Length: 288
Image (cartoon, rainbow, N blue to C red):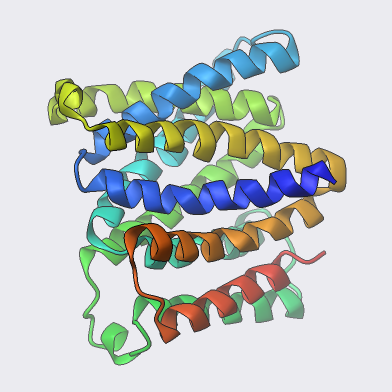
């Protein structure tokens, strides 16, 4: 079926964001990169929301603050830490760390929303965290015990926390807004919040960006944000969230392969073992 191809391509697009982000972070400041990414995404999302829903929902006063918080966490903070982290560590390692998003979301949901954690989910969490530790430490657990981790790993971990908060806030916001409207408003608010810091960082230097830089920005904004979101939610509507969610497991795999093919990053044993453990853990945690 076409929807399965779309979901597979979505996983590949999302894996590719780590490669594009890694390349872009070497030449463009984090605020500027994030601003242009979501300026492009916002344009497409506004058009898409209007076309799909036939209108653009006006926010009520009580919705303004939650939507701003979505933009602050899921766009502003996430992308700031995303680009800062990718400037310092490999795309493949960052992808495995971020692949633990569903694990932390499950844990925080259990704490704040009283969602149950059965033995299968707990097993999945332990397996996934073990895989992340192997990747972060490059197979040498003494690296973590001795505190020999760099700022790159710390930024990516903050990236994960930002997304977890965004996801938990989104549960409350989407009680009143559709998923598409919620994402559109969060992209718009995040873009607005990014403008001033990007301007101070040197936004005007965009005239000196290379063709490759602009391609990476467009890729992140359109393929990695808009098209990925649309196709993923098409999958949820057609085959359900459980089966559609399984394709998320291909994201770190595609990121590692693309980083190997495009950036020449090595395929180490610790990376491969960690990938298998994280993917297995995420699968077990999200099984119904």
